[in-house]
Each structure stands twice: as C-alpha cells, then as structure tokens.
Image (cartoon, rainbow, N blue to C red; front, side, top):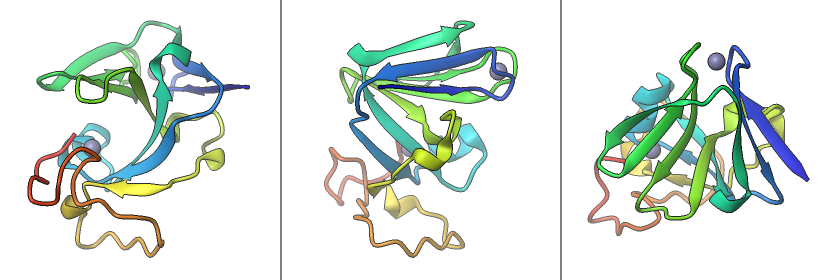
Amino acid sequence: MTTAGHCLCRKTGWEFEGEASWGCYCHCDDCRRNCAAPVVAWVGVPLENFKWRGATPNTFESSPGVRRYFCGTCGSPLGFEASHYPGAMHVYAASLADPATFTPEFHLNNKSRLPWLKMDDDLPKHEGTLFQTSDEAGQGD
Ligand SMILES: [Zn+2]
Ligand SMILES: [Zn+2]
C-alpha cells in the first residue's frame, strides 16, 4: 500500500509504503508556529519506507538536530525529521492526499495546549514528548 501527500501548490509531495508507525497531535509551540495552526497532526513513518515526490523541499532547522521540510514554492509545511527520533520521518497529516484517513492515537506536549482549544477525545495526553517525563516537558519538538 502506498500512502501519498502533497503541498498546497502540488509541486512537492511525499509517499511511503506500508503502514504508518503512529498518528498524533502535537501542541508544542514550534509545531504551532510552523503551521500557524492551534494544533498540528502528525503521521510517523519509517524513514526507509519514505520518499519525496516532485520538487525537492526546502528545510529549516527549528532547533538543533530538528529539520522541518516545506515546499519552496508555496511554503506549505510537509515534514519533520529529528535526531531524537532516529529513522523516522514525520509528515503533517493535513498534507495527506486524503486527510480523512488519518487516525490520531495520542497527544504530545499537552502541557502547551492552548487554553481555548477544546479537544474532548479520550486519547492519551502526554505532557511532553514520548521521551520526556512530565517534569521535563517544556518547549517542544
Ligand atoms: Zn507547494
Ligand atoms: Zn511539536
């Protein structure tokens, strides 16, 4: 099975084979600002099954070891790769060819969730990332 996605202008896209690793929401300030959106939905993909399509995306290092990919023409955010998530590409769920197929499984950085954003699902809500205890939860990525 091939799953694909693309940016607003469709010049840059991506695809992966097989199953996604997971789907989640991230409430960190970096993801929020990167998309100018109150919350960002992510699909985790094994890097070995992932490839870019069309025009090569541009990258921005949002913090040390964190690369965010975006379309050089329309600016749409497309992907995220980080040294603390080795072997994984993360793509923005809203860039899926059919975003309705996305299934969120948990929230990350719930500690940073905007107070006016009401999400009344029953999904697990991690205060930080998957690798932080709630005491360390802070900034983001
Ligand atoms: Zn584009
Ligand atoms: Zn984030």
